[in-house]
Length: 101
Image (cartoon, rainbow, N blue to C red; front, top):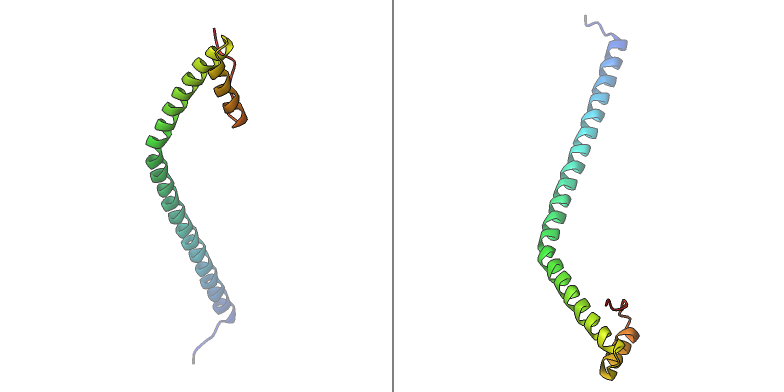
């Protein structure tokens, strides 16, 4: 004769279900973590690939500011061609700071 203990069977089934839920949550969290790590790695690679272009852009910006500054000084001293260049740049939306003396 087999004795069945309903309370123990129910408790065991509940424990198994809870264990499966906990394992599923940990697997899901692990999967999400791996995905985020891969995503971060891809972002780091893309940023590194853009670094040289950003440096070149900064150099071009510095050169342009120097040219515009000198042109602005010429315009302030009365050079008509420089005034036309400065006015054209302003119409195109280039912000020109006052020249430094």
